[in-house]
Structures are given as structure tokens and as C-alpha cells.
Image (cartoon, rainbow, N blue to C red; front, side, top):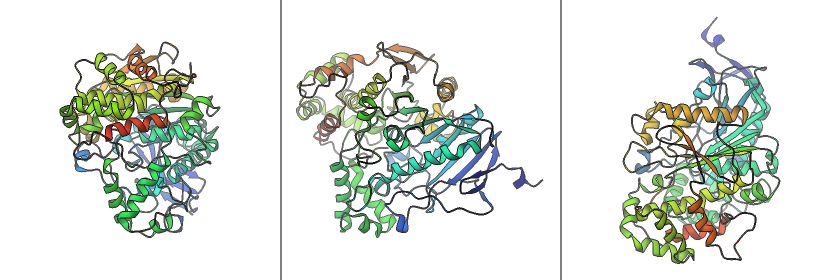
Length: 526
């Protein structure tokens, strides 16, 4: 028997693929789920790939979506490999048992990167540990930036989200051949991947495709259409072309990416600025996903796990040197925030009272994180009592100033802490016992819907993964989040939830508050 014959072969709807056995599991990389989205297909919804004869080799990662590289400041912390080629609508599968009959639970992963960067080829996302522990793991590439989330008058909105839906449909149709159970699919993502997961949970076209969902450090949300248009118009101005998909399709790809990177320098949860995002389109996203999931019937039977890192904001502030700059502004920074947020002194004063030793950057950073992320995730869990599980990642990085920052938990969830790419955020010596605890909880949730701690109820149980043994804390952020509820005016209040102030309008206000600080320099959101 030749080496090729010993490698696993699986038939997909479009042709057979040959993977590789690696450390006891079968791996298939670069499997197409859509046609290359370029040429006449640029800025259009995805189409199925062309079928092929024979057996297609699936040993290497497929092309990644076009994207600008991270700035030097962020590249020291985050890895983002680029694989050239047009066939970027592809996915990867790790499985312990290829072939029908195994009926194993399935985890579909949507990477983060602010919808402008990232890919399934990031080494931290290696799916070996999930397959080793009995889960069929699938990671997805999708269009990014202006190609995936630009808003144009002559093209449908949200093509990148439509790519993700096409991949999810492919998994539902095909995963049994890889040993998976199409009725036990968990959709998961971190940051922009979590925001995408929330949007797909609420999408009418995705109902029935997902059994469970994991949202890490990203809430269901819809971006303001004018903000996305502003990003496109600023790019068009620099390129000296009309702000249409037809005109953008004629621009050299590298020039387009450079222009996108320049215009997006101030795209950050702290600094605001124009940015790409998922928008309400009357079709795939008929209304704000958070509203649909909290107040509507979307995904009512989907079990949920969600959470955040303790110091999300530090990845937004530390690489660009903004942490020290905000601290130096001191009272000026908080005064500007109060004026623009129309809060009076109550919210920042409350945070100061709760955290008397915190610096200004920590106060502002936690306010932004709570308002934009934790409040909507609380609302989402409140809408699913007994079916939701909430965690906080609180282990501090061994690198200076990062604390428990955004994306730090990924190496622990994937049990890839030994990789150099994980050490770029965690430093050396990350505790393996913490990886065992987090990865084990994710596996249990994907397998049977219970990660191993108390489900969400009125006591607000939160599993804390930090130094020492993981433990449950009850309402650890209730005091901070209650400050926002007490600041709501009667016209803004929502009787359904005391924390229902995480609306797009309020979020926009808070982002504009921090923009008014007029901080020097720039930061690019990871």
C-alpha cells in the first residue's frame, strides 16, 4: 500500500478529498465550500464550487482571504499567516474517525480579527486537541474587509456573513462523511467570530443548523450602516473612484488593501472611527441580532456558552502605547467621556468608587468593555435561563501590561499553549492545568451542552478561569453593570431587563466619548 493509499479519503458534495493522519487524527485542509469570489463573483454572494474528478489533495491550508498585515505593534502579539490564491472560500476538518457511522459532536469555528484580518490557518486554532478528545472540528475562511463587509448601492450587504452561512450549510450537509453528527453542531467564534456567530444564530436562513453556540468576547450586534458607508466613502475618496462595488472591483487588490489599512487606523473599540461590520440588510440580517435573540423567537432552543476576558481592553491599548497616554490625561479623559456620553458623573464616579486604585485607562477600558460587550452578553444569557453558561478568563499574561487581555484565552481553549504563536500573547510558562480545565469545559459543552458548572439564573453564576482552581463567582460584575441601568433615562429604559442599555445608540455614544479624548497616535483593532 502506498503512502497516498494509507491516507484518509472522504467524499464531499463536489468531489473526493485526501487528507493526512497526524498524531492519530485525520486532517483535511483547504477543502472548498464556495467558488473563488473574484472576477465576476467579486462582491457577490457565494456560489458553490465547481465539482472535480478524481481525488483532490487536502494536505495544506487553502488560500486565505485578502487582508492587510497587522501593524508592527500588533504583529508582535498576534500571528496572521497569509496563503496566496483566489480559492479562499475553504475550510479545514480535524476528525478522529472519518467515515459515516461515528456520529461525533461537531464544532465549527469562525475566527476573529475585526472582520478585516485573521484566518483558519492561524496556528493557535489547530483543531488536533478537539479531535483527540472526540470532536469533529471545522475551521472556516471567509471574505474580509471591504470584500466581505463593504456596503455598496450596487451589491448585496454582508457577503462575508453569507460565506459563513454557506460554510455552515456545507458542514450540515457533509460532516457525516467525516464522522460528525449534523444534528450536534456547535457554532463558535471569538471577537468578530463571536459577533458573526450571534448574527447567524439570529438569521432566518440558519435556523435548525445549529444545536449549540459559543460566543467568546463578542456580542450579537449590527453595525451602524452610516459608519460602514463612511469607511467605504473614505476609501473611495483616497482611490478617486465612485463608492460602488463595480468601481472597487476594478482596483488592484494590493492597492485596495493598503487603502483599507490606512482608512481603518482608528477602527478600535476604544477610539471608534469608521469600521466594517455586519449590518441589517432585510434578508440575512432582518433586524439587530441581539434584539432578535433576546426579544424574538430566533434560536430559542440553542444552548449557549459565552464570556469574556477580565482585561479585554488591554490588547486594544497596550500595543499602540495608548495605555500610558490615557493614564496621563487623568481627569481630562473622564471629563470628556462624561460630557459626550450624557451620563453626568454617575457612571465613571461609580467605577472609581468600585476600583479606587485603578488608573484612568483601566476605568475607561472597563467602561467600554462593559458597555459594548458584557452588558449585551448578560442580556443574551438572561434570555436563556437554564440554557446558558457564562465564564470569565482572568489569568494574566506573563508579558508586561497585557493582563487578561482580549484573545489571550484562545491558546487555552485550543490546548495549543506550547506553540510559539500562543506564547506571543501569553509569554513562556503558561499553565497546562488551565488549558486542561478550559479545553475540557469546551469539549463537554460541545458534546452534551454542559461545560461543568451552574447554568445561568438569577444568581448570575460565572465560572472564573484564572490562577488556581477554576471556581464559580456569583454576580462578579453586577455592581458595575448596575451603574449603567441607574443612568438610563425613562425614554431609554427597557422594562424587559435592568441591563438593557447595550443598544447600538448607547454603544455609539460611548465610542464617540472616547474619540473626543483626541488621543495622539493610532491603534488598529485586532
